[in-house]
Image (cartoon, rainbow, N blue to C red):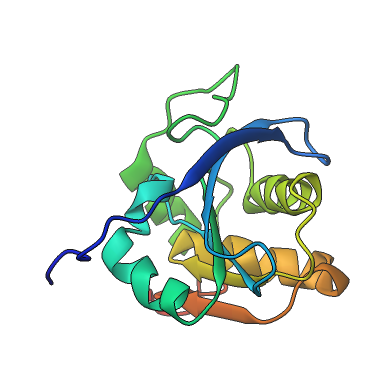
Amino acid sequence: MKAASNPIEWQQGFAKSSTTGLNMAWESAGPTDGETIFMVAGLGCQLTMWNDEFCAPLLQRGYRLVRFDNRDIGLTDQHPTSMKVNVPATFIRNKLGLPTPTNYKLDTMANDAIGLIDALELKRPHLLGISMGGMISQIVAAKAPEKIGKLVTLMSSTNNPKLPMP
């Protein structure tokens, strides 16, 4: 894929999630009066994974884009008591339906996102989640349907261990 011809000028900032108190890094681009797409990244991905090449066509259609770093990623606050997690072992335990050690759950990350939507005073943004961000977005939509427009998930799942991987 070739890079966008004109780099996008992203407005950057930090906002405290109104639900969890987490200080979250975010960026936005596009018209403030346009429909907003709230972009939720996947496991271990910073907000920049939503690159300019992906974002440019959405901006050309008049959307405002908001992308952010989930907790423990990029410039967003780090969890103060993060434990080391054996990712392969945790993945297998999850697939077997066994309890897994975690610092927090997808529900916590959904609360972060809801709080950021509130803190940025976004009016019914459309949610666009990729991979784990799609799982987070589904929880946001279920918990706060009155706060969102449409839901789009890419390469995601419901996180039911009995379903195939995305």
